[in-house]
Length: 219
Image (cartoon, rainbow, N blue to C red; front, side):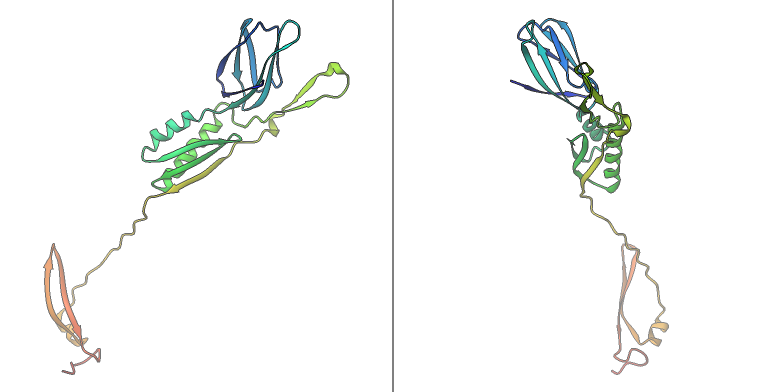
């Protein structure tokens, strides 16, 4: 049965074989390398983000192992940096076809921008693109084999999907100016001062006006 193996970018894994290996085939060597150290042990190294197949054959050409290998970025490092530089955040990092998806909550829009900046640096380090390599059989004779169609210009650049929620409350500060008005001016405006005082350094006054708005009171 075919085994599914996930491998971090620029990392390696050891595969122990049930019997001696005589031949190893890597379908896409641009994505991963397979190296034998002993007849029953191989080392796989993730070179670029992508998928490939690895087949191991015995002395009579029989298939010993079949692997479906997926090389992915290791998001644990990015999550560590986010916790370090944005400690008040609660962010989860996921990969979707080598695109980074950020979910969770942050306190401010600035924290959200910082998380996106860190994710951008993460996908730009080492292998800056998805490395979606395509395999096409070459034409001509059987000896022509298989071509790996992998021009750098056709690689798809990884994207950052920002699904973060900002939970910090917007604060609005109101500046209040209290003007002191003389009694004579208030009387001219038809306003009667009925009380005044001060509390914590703030002066206050209670006023009433007549029904006419200006002039003498009707009472």
